[in-house]
Image (cartoon, rainbow, N blue to C red; front, side):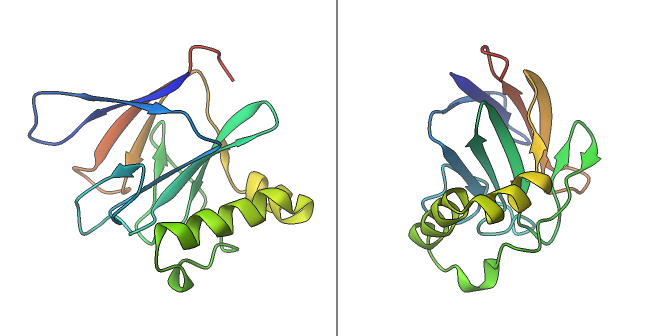
Length: 138
């Protein structure tokens, strides 16, 4: 099972979060799978989603997301301003994953996560960094 190891700033303890769904929502919004309480983080900042045999990271934010120190391309097809709740995001993601053409566009603008990598939210100094681990190496 894939995991995110999170080291919140100014905290001594790490969080070990299981990524056990076909999509995993990250942001400051209530109900996100990983809630980051930082005004620089969008309500629905990024999504980790499963496609075929891999896990991908898609950025939906204004301040960016990093993957091993590089900017993840923001996907313009995601209309964040119209999504008010986690349920709205869930519905939008499921519709994208069910539509082959839109899913291809989403995957083309996402980053395939490797066995072990570092993800940062947002793409600014002092951001929250997570270590992504996938023992299956998807």
